[in-house]
Image (cartoon, rainbow, N blue to C red; front, side, top):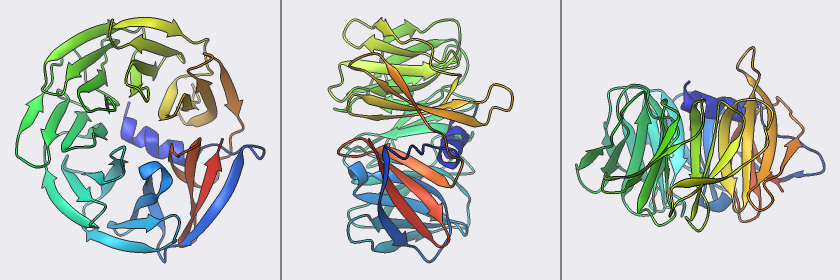
Amino acid sequence: MNRILAATLFGLSTICAAQELKQIATITTGVNVRAAAVCGQGREIVGVDADGKLHVWDTTSKTGAVIETSDKARRDIACSPDGRRAAITLRDGSTVIVDLSRKKVLKSVRPTAHFVQGMALDNGHLVAVASDDGAPKVFNDSSDAIIELSRPFGAGGGIAFSPDGSLVASPDEDTNVRIYEASGALRATVNCGPLEPFFVAFSSDGKELYVSGADALVRTIDVASAKVVRTSEKIGTAALAMTVSGDDVLLLMMDEYTMAPKDATIWSAKTNKARKVQADPTGFIAAGPAKSGFLLVKQEDKAISVWELK
């Protein structure tokens, strides 16, 4: 399954519960935005227009700037937790690294020749990339060093750094989740049931790792012991995307027949309980953590609207 595509589909069929969703801004872009990411806990929106131009918009001032132009089709966008850097994947497997504070492209790196399925950034110089055929890789955007992680079976999907950047976690098709040191050394292999895990995300303190995938469960791994310590009840159907904010995990679930987005659910790490959010197929193209809850971006005619979900 293509995790990058899944994340895009997440945007197109996301969450819309009237009692929880509140519009907080409309930003005139002058272009139609086809892909986006929420950065810096909602301070900025990074997006790509239909012509391949890369933009960044400030959600407070509602102003924007073009950072870089390319005719290569972008697949997806990810941001570092502190919102200082963004990474954009290209069709050929290249990854473009952008300094958001200076609105400047730092470099383009091609860590894989394969289709990128997931990527993550730490708050320093590291970028992790998972492809559809080949071992996950970690590279340093300030050098040319590329570290290949182990891949005993299958391809990595979604990938994540711990908050301090010392660990990397990757779900693999052999139904295990692997936790690595950022140096590339394998730290632990954790069995996550009979079906494939698709997404991983660390808790805000880095002590736990959340896993979701084909079995529609959320598993919690204690990072220190590398053991599954908690498993949720079944939450709808297989997961298509996962976003974490505080103690809450926002999940998009797929239609089992069409594999298209179907439902959205918020699972609480505190209570191990889930609540379903009403689905609306209209125009959302990104979701990410905010200072409180989640921030969503909706595609409008030559504009984007920004929404809070709590």
